[in-house]
Image 1: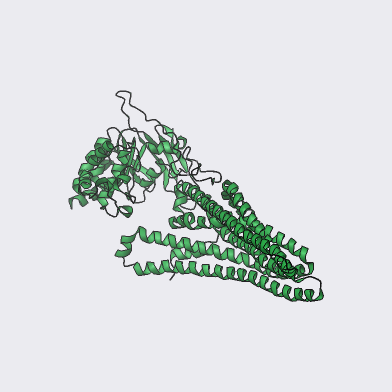
Image 2: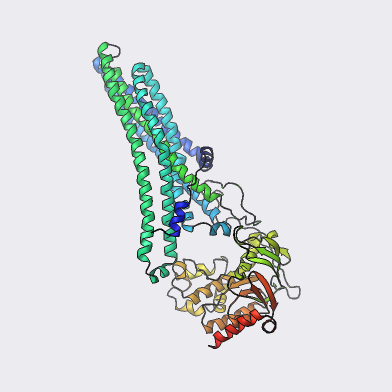
Length: 624
């Protein structure tokens, strides 16, 4: 049975890049490692030369046997060539393998750095599992195409030309027979290559679908079990795995045909040369030693031809991965210095040499504004001036001329029906999204003029679902403030009413909280999110339904904490609980993307029917 996800996957066209663009993208990843790859290619060429000398040594061996001469020297030389060629090829292989791993590492670091700086709309349009597949699976294919394929093509071409020259010097007639067979079967292989590319790309996309569906299932594991959906989800993910298998088998089929064609070409050439060469020996046109050497060269011809086919196959596989990597690199990113969309192609440097790593370069933090009376930091002012916003051009507006002003420290509550645009206010302040019209001022400065990292450094944000990351409790607390001291952490734990939780945990702050905080209750996760935001020491604190899962005792305690914080910090809360709203210095009532009223609780109950209805409903809920 089809699902929306499977239908979408089937309807999404495969990404294809022109050959020139594919080569440019490949060179971007290859360029930082070209010196090391060139060294590996040199050793591979030396190994090829030693291999080409072996048939000549064998020819000399046969001639000396015919002349009843000593063959000791020739045998020693032939043995030395074999040993030397093997050692050099092994060294070249190690250098190439190391270079290939470096290419993959640099590509992954660059891609990770870019994807973690994606603009939020770009992230919301993309499946996380698909992005993970591009970082893990697709970059793996670069290992072969950016190093091994290039060297295989170079050494294979040199080996092929050198072997053909040697064959031409021995006998042009037999060379013509060999070329005739190779050209005929080589044309068939060229037709096969695009089939390998298409099958590989479909296989990579199917692997990405496996990651996407697994991420969906694991991300809602309790819901999956509570819904009895294990079997259904297993079938969906297994279907993606079967599609990956099917496309992998399809690619393997064409690769098998290609390799078999190469083997067939060599075998047919050998038989043709053996038959025609035997006749030429009988006629006296060539001697037996020349025929033997020619046949040996013919076997060695298999190696360069094999390398060329291998390079072509790896290129077809790699071009499919490159297309998916380039597509991910083109997703819109943030410039943390300006907040503008990221521009330019990512670099693929040596490991540790300027690779794009999240947090590698922190931008300037805008200094806090201080109150002239006592030097204490004051809260930031926030002003919305006729703000209009829509998430996409094809979607209806979320905000229609939203205007309000928050002068500074204190608490401002946003209330209204679901879908009124309350949470979007926070997303626009944080510059997760850009306004369609109007402007937003923080401390009298348009947020578009702030460096993004400076703006966000002044803000603490407690999200509606209070996400907790896998790891320890300490790691979650200091996630937004990695330089926090133990004393600061201890103080925040008390304010967020987490100190008793830490005391009963088996390893205290170093206790692992599980995937998405699965070892914590909903209320505990909310308190962790609040503590994390407070530890950041913000001047502007955004709280989106931050106490919805707390029990009455903890909610009352945290209300007092928030009220205390609001004396120095600007606190904006989205709230549905009247107990929270009544503490606010001002209340902004929103409905259908507009601000319909601003005032205190008493003023709004008397003047705004919608607020009066909401308040009455919540009074009833509290009283009931």
